[in-house]
Image 1 (spheres, rainbow, N blue to C red):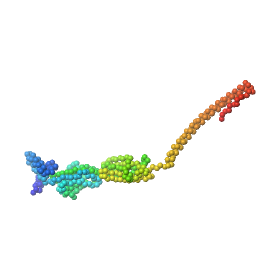
Image 2: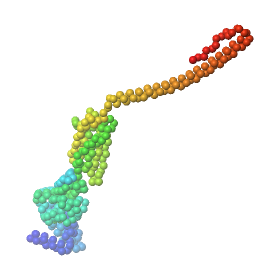
Image 3: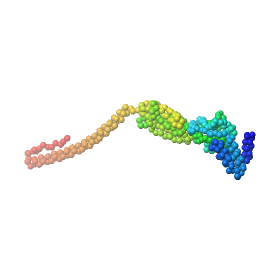
Image 4: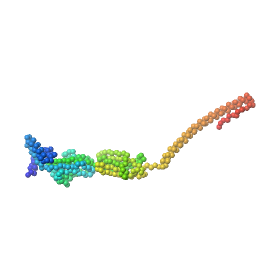
Length: 366
């Protein structure tokens, strides 16, 4: 008898286009009510205030009240912390009713910001895909194996970077409904580190570690075989077009010092890492040839000696020229003296014949 009355009431409201108004009434008046006495007081008080205007609202709100009494009382529970998912894998957004009860005949709606544009909708005992968000088509599945125990968790397939954000688990039974928010965090493990030897620098070898496809921003470290962290030379990180991070980190290693090292990239959100190891052989390092060292010392000395010798020869030539000039002047003066001596002897012979010269002639120098 009760079932027939309920069906008749539904037909009545559908014929008059007031089913949505009655549900809105129940949502506004009964969403936060957990006590039947409180619910009754709200309904009677509100409906009493409506009697003076029209008897029709009284029917609506009495219907709301009856439906409220017939609907199960429950709460919707998610998680108190975010769910972490890896791009490309599947993940489950947990949600269940408390106390445990069957949700087979309830409406279960998962949505993000728009209530009508849903991620997944279960209604009238089956999944509904009419207004499902295009990004989630073919990627969602309500876990019905435990739906009779109140488990209304949602599985999302092939997680994408754009799936990150808040979700709402909404469950409605008749006119009673509850919902719970849930946060989904996305993480991505990037490519394996690629280590390459770039060039010689500062007496050692510059080694570079590159990797791409990380989210959130990863942490990059160099380690020696004992696990000790090594200081890096430079680090560069950038956000690619796909919204994932790319990283490049370099280090300089020297011969017989950390020739065996590892590039270690860690996703701190997932607490997972990827690692690559490289060993730099001795012959890659710049070699010092002893002959080159000797030449580097001898050649400057040799060139210095040659330069000094040339300089001394130039000075010697200059001084020899001056000496020759002075000798020429001396010879010239000695010639003049000899001429004067001969003239003096000639004059003495004239004045005193037979006297002769008393002084020997002056000899010119060589």
